[in-house]
Length: 231
Image 1: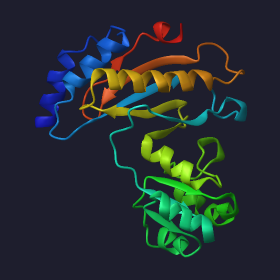
Image 2 (image 1 turned 120 degrees about the horizontal axis):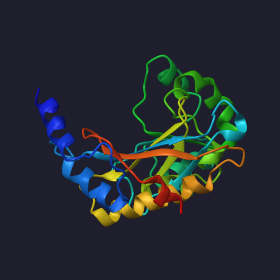
Image 3 (image 1 turned 120 degrees about the vertical axis):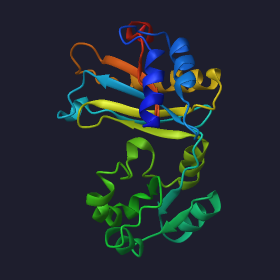
Image 4 (image 1 turned 60 degrees about the vertical axis):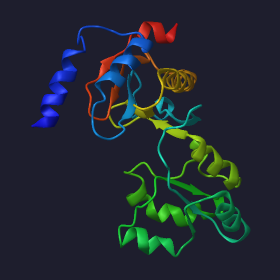
């Protein structure tokens, strides 16, 4: 298989026992992103948190200085003037109760982020079983439950991304595209790491960042030197 050969070739460039500086890691990830499409550069952080405890949950959002390189489709749940405001701000889809059957029954999920005004959360809550597992449920901590829909939409289109623990206490977030310059990826990376370090729960015992790896969509992971990131 071509992809298997490509991956094997890329693996030759990575020393599996090494812990790389961020500059060297970015250079390596860009070099290994050889697919025919513009691969996403992703950050994977294994934390020392225990997400089963509410006080060790991590969830937040940050605007990447150079964006994600991806066109984000935004659905806004709002009514009246707030619905008009969302349309004017450039939301891709705006609606209320009438969207429930379309999402629940028809499986419509042609959007990447969901924003809702607080008064619409009773309606959106009915979609919890559909949106929750996909990480699409609006959340105040991520700034996606708000009356200021214009700011929410502008931030998302400017490159706002959400970070959160998965079930295995790992954070997976995009840093940009392989076509970005090394400086752009480094800026985005530093902004993300700073935000995640600030979000450290005070109750975490032991190492907060157990391992950090950078990878592209089709490329192998490159492990980073965590000690240099936290100093």
